[in-house]
Length: 237
Length: 260
Image (cartoon, rainbow over all chains, first blue to last red; front, side, top):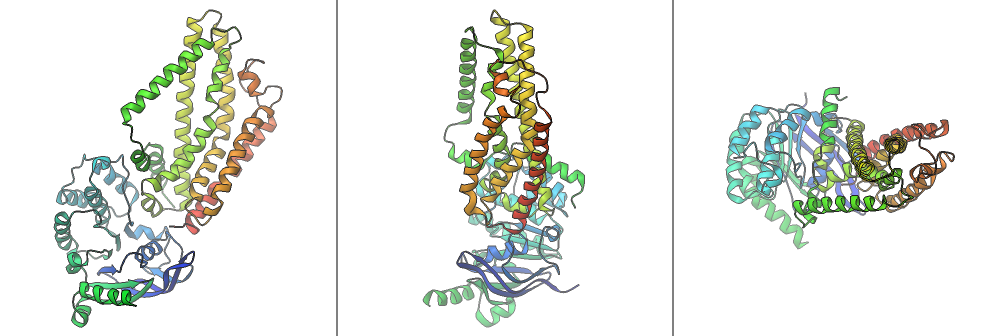
């Protein structure tokens, strides 16, 4: 088994005249918590959608877990889509049953533990939830799957600052012993910085920097500093 | 492939009314008021029919004219099944389920078909209750008229049920096109569907000129349990085949031509 989880070579995806992915080339190692970072519209979500077979690239090559992405590879991927919501008529319990029925590797016991940790009542209906509660529900549905790859596209969106800090602290404990590759895109770099052990910076559909966070920090300072430096430079251009 | 028990669980998920977040946000009138309006309209409709039934030329079979909008309801059952995924922002969950797209579409098709059948059954029961009430309380109607009413309804429903697979697959396809690279043809597709709808209403009388449905529903000729000939059955069977092709193509669009 290769130690590369995601391999992309010269990946291109265009929407009319705009290139969402512009010859993106990257290799993401296995069993790391990876930050996929970049400003809005830089191609992070398109990158994730390509990994899950939601959109087909126009050209280039992509391998996820050693295979071409598609519905079959999604057995091994837990994916929290960008701007996703949950079925409004479901309760937390029903959402878990849905996940248990349709998502391979779903661990009901882990889901119950996470629901307890995230303070989600099993009878709470999605229709009556705050955006933060709904975001927590979707996050727990992904994290309760025993699959090799977890992709979380802006998972903390809508969760208030206090809950976010609490959830991230819990996540660090929860993810510590797991043999999974976890890709997280987020704008809240300063809060989740401690979570990542690998980072990929994307700008205008291209990877501008990637590597182990320890090495990146040693060379450039914190991830937040890198973010500021690189994207400020771009704005000046 | 998806194990059959998972497929049927998915059909069950699709069959249930999950609500539409987008529509609910637009709807400013509370739900209970909508229920009040629907009940008021039902009572008003009942009163109108009751009043019309006092006229000499009224036949119980005329009541079925109220159900002529059912083909559109069947179409929107298919259309809404795809649209609600985007309206609810659940499309990402749906389309990354680890099962072939054709099976995801097929589950929606069966869910929509079951919903359409549930609506048809409910409308039939309601219409039968109306007709029976009128027959009981108005002079001049007999059990034979109620039987004639049932026969006319059964004939109409046979056509509706026979064409439902085609209509639903067309609805699913139309709902999907909007979110794929075929989006530019979406307005043209609507125009074609409206023309097809008109053709349906014109054509379903022509399907059997001797026992045309308009003639049956207006009481000009007697209703029979099965008013269709071989050509009508052939049209329905061809409709099923085309419907299957449309579902295949819809799955292809969702797999290869999605535009997110």
